[in-house]
Image (cartoon, each protein chain N blue to C red):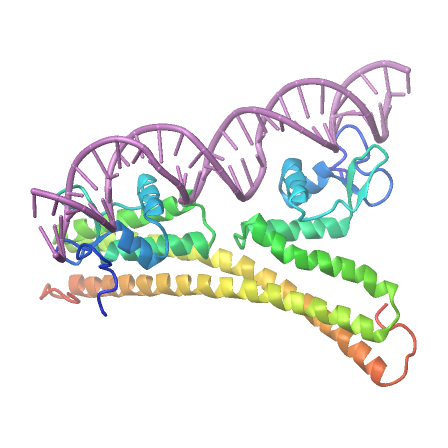
Length: 168
Length: 168
DNA sequence: CCGTACTTTCACGTAAACGGCAAGGTTGCG
DNA sequence: CGCAACCTTGCCGTTTACGTGAAAGTACGG
């Protein structure tokens, strides 16, 4: 029962922990077409290809795809904006390779510093969106409060006497 | 200098506090075309037309348009979703008229209750989006922390001796 | 080795959300 | 009343983010 992905034919991934496009698409809740399109826009690179040129994805790819989807669905960023944010991520990945390529502590510190700056940038973008959204929530809650106040007034009026018009 | 909107010809609005499409568009930061399109989708109704069929907007219209824009830009909702949320708002407006049309406290309570429910619905939608966004912020912050920890380690290493590889 | 399901690239189709233009009517200062 | 600037309703064009085949290759259990 742990084998949800195999379906009918194929073990899913050739032999390693690599998945084919349909499976990753299903895992993150999208379609193979979208994943290919995202790749076409430079949002990710399949990490590997099979003998017959099948796209093969590893866990970091899946994470990345999930992040993309979240940025699109939850944050409402356009793929172009996401491309900006992931240009950062891509640089980070390349930085990861460079990081292990060097032993120079100074170089490593520079790479890590860059990475931190990129994260801070992402956080800023997300936070500003959270704040604006929160403002909308607050405003709507204020309206709700006013409506509830009116309801309370009316309820009291109904319970007691029917005098003059209250908040008008 | 307080007359930013008039431009060259016209007082902007015929005589009352009503504005023409270009001015409201400018005020909320969009184009007349978009405003007309939003109207076409049923997101709002111009509230008034001039003698020559010019669209005329009042302050509540502007508020509504601002809300629409915020939902689109900040919350990232599609116009279709906004239409859903504003179907509520539209009902609210109609409810407003109905509210003043009746004197029956029971009827008024029902109308206010409906309004409150609509607001709650809107708040729920916005809040769930805030939460998902906040999760993304948290995750990114976690990564930032880890990166900073690495930096600290490296800095200590550099300041002291170069022993074995730390967190690896 | 065979059949079926999955995958590839190419290409065209589409819904959403407008942009832009045309042809004609409106406003309103001068 | 004249004319510049703005508005109206079409209507077609464009960008984004995919959907949907078509034609051909691949993976693999039987």
